Length: 123
Image (cartoon, rainbow, N blue to C red):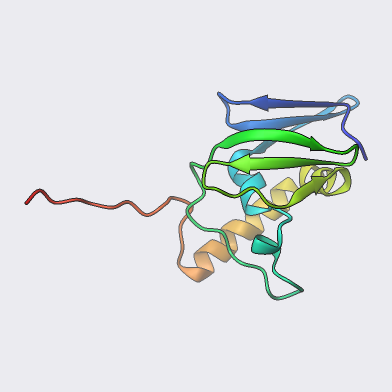
């Protein structure tokens, strides 16, 4: 299903996708942790890699990939994986359950959405 509108909302840190009268907002963090890349999805069922510390990730660029997908480039260096129209629609309509699942997996792994901070001590 091809979106009828696509907008990057830098201030609210999301990508807005329109499908007729329906509008969906997918946060940069959500898009990053659900990247369709092999780095995130692995190379088969059960090989997924839990993405941690992505709460403050920023979308740097968004490019069309032919007439079927978007390529997203994030400030953490992640730039692989093509978000095809069907996958983006899947993320939109399943956002609540996917987000709940992600938060549960983080908790089970003892991980956090926030990136680890480094404390420096003056010598």
